[in-house]
Length: 382
Image 1 (cartoon, rainbow, N blue to C red):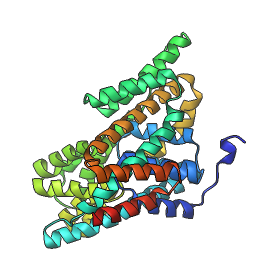
Image 2 (cartoon, rainbow, N blue to C red):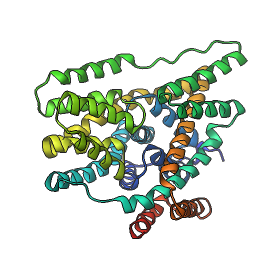
Image 3 (cartoon, one colour):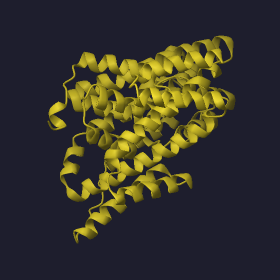
Image 4 (cartoon, helix red, strand yellow):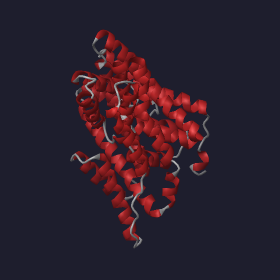
């Protein structure tokens, strides 16, 4: 039986429930989120093929916005069209937004963040194990030739050297397309993106600086940030610092650092930091407006780029470039795993929890949701 014949259908209700669950337990940042999605949708539920997952992951890395949220939106679009796109993305975002809003309410009322170091102490080593397992599975399809292995190694080296993730992926795709072109005596065609759309969104967002203080300006500020931010949460931090501390003077440096900390120790996308900032600036309405503003560009870009991916796969040179981008994406994921491991595996208990997590995943096929819950309890008691 072929892989495609095993693919199962999914109703809108199933899509909503699964992404609500993931949005509630997805700790650890984009790499961990992608690992959980691969486990959930490729291996357990068989909603998409591994090749489809890798292509959507690569595409999400090439457009602005939170990568893992965009992959969720891609999966929803693939299964149920534009309705699935909205349901999947909203269901993944809403749990984090609600949790962050509750924390923001407590922060405004009591002036400090709740302590979560104990749970994170246990969760992070298990998250490392989850990502390692997913990398092993994804690499079998994404790095299937010696050339792609070389491209992945080069991408990892460039990332460790501090090269921008977008540039790393561009180099990986170009090398793969060029290699295909040399093999076939044909020059590859460069990618054509959607510059008019991006320029329009950025131009609208840029007008935020001229709006009076209020919900409209808050929305446009986050729309602008969501339209141009590539890369990690640290890149997002730079944009937030420039917009809300230096330009608008709506936040202090300490409030900004606290908002990023909340995004890191809560489940779901780190961009839910916007929800926290929105609440501080304008209460519940501000939380809603900021959340919509930062995530809206991702929905639009996925809706426009989703139908293009199958067409790219049918073009040999674009398919070769996409293979290179997939290999580069896995390399970036590996670098994040290495960095997270160095920060998380700090003593024998954390090493043991990571090891036990790997055994539970690889040998006993334990669901990652149960592992994270157990790790949180162990970390709390330790």
